[in-house]
Length: 294
Image (cartoon, rainbow, N blue to C red; front, side, top):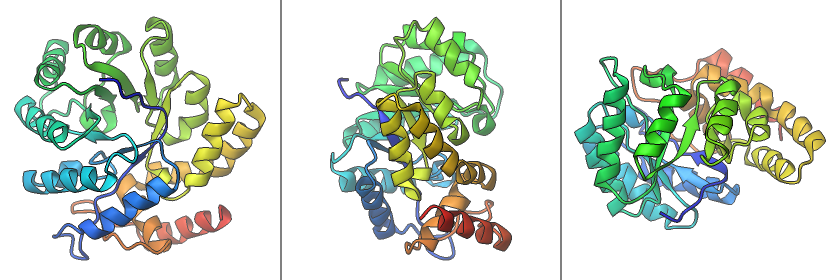
């Protein structure tokens, strides 16, 4: 468990055929190559942007295996293995580890509201079944489960390979609290695009973002300015990209990123139903945003 993650962690999309029924793995390979060429420091397949929740088990395995083979250790990888059941998450975690993932990401998705004891046991069981690090992912907007900072740190203390936290509530105070109560010893990562600048200032080790598919240079400029402690440049670069970051969040990650990739020459299909593609007004707005950032 020696891999450390920092900087810009790019999410992959999952390309489909035009009708949304078939995977398009060659297009996935091209999107991965774009992310690496754009300088990402790590890649995270099968998260929210990758529509992992909308794939069959076989499709999930095909995307995970292809992604890890195509990345081929050029950058570190964090595979999202979240599932409604603990058993399902364990199967996915085993598969990811066996195919070379450097870490896995676990969001405690659930139909029934989980108690703290159930959440802890979920992570404990997954952690006991694999050897790679786990990124604990807190995103109540998609999972329906909101973990307090105190609960997160309890899990980190009790499950040895839960070594990092991705915080996506959009509440910067959560990050400050993680830093203070964790005494600066628990690496945390920003998962809310519009908070990128504040998160880095609060001590985030990295930024997990789908925006790296569309504006990799601006993402990198922000991170490098933060590393130099050049707040003036960091602010200028951040506010330049903020309208797009806001729109990606509001328009929905798969819909906006897939539309943006098509506008830049890579057809990756539409999101899988029930998620709609970006409507015409949204496409027009996204195109205008991208043109201003070229």
